[in-house]
Amino acid sequence: MWYYFKTILLIMILTFFLAYVGKIAGGEIGMLIALAIGLGVNFISYFFSDKIVLTMYRAQEVKENDYPELYNMVKSLSQKAGIPMPRVYIINEDQPNAFATGRDPKNSAVAFTRGILELLNYEELMGVTAHELAHIKNRDILISTIAAGIAMAITILIDMLRWTIIFTTSKDNERNILADLILIFVAPIIALLIQLAVSRTREYLADKTGAQIVGNPIYLANALEKLDYYSKQIPLNRYSPATSHMFIVNPENFLALFSTHPPIKERIRRLRSMI
Image (cartoon, rainbow, N blue to C red; front, side):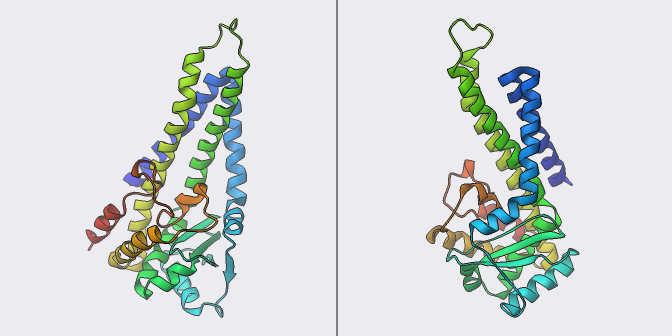
């Protein structure tokens, strides 16, 4: 229950912050424009984000005859999770990683890199698959899309505010230029940190739900140990930072403060404590 409450709280804070930035940038009209931009970005992301990301990584859909073991694993775990079976995709990348996408359980997909299929044993791959199915079951894709959309709207507003400052004359006493400059630098950081907090909260929940689906938290814990090491050694081609929150482990080495994922050691500790 705490995971859900925390997520709702963070989304509300992000939304109010969006409205605040809009009001600072353009008064009440600016606030309405900010909310309209946020809704527009989320609408587009909701319906097309899965197609965009799968195309970006050149993911190829596979059927049972192509990868029978993987296909049947996804099918079996989907039944245990109580969700429709998602489409299965393979990404021709050496870095071991995986992600889930789609706007709802009826329109979802799971994608695995070639590297993760070669690295993990059957039980570990079950743990990873269950984790991704947990994201679909918990509707994390929708939640992360909303958070990313609001954060993007804030970025758009900040760009608008920059242009407003550029064209503000010295005779214009209606604006506090110093306050606007501070907002320009601080707002994107605040929005990013809130977005990351949402992402980390959902990762912990997906770990827990995934362990319950597969029936053994050690499967995912062991997989995370391998993925943490090898993902740092092998780069992900065609990588876009905007998609980092989707993967089971962060595709790049990054400062812990700005990582979309909680610390791997803490995730493993929590999983092992479930035994």
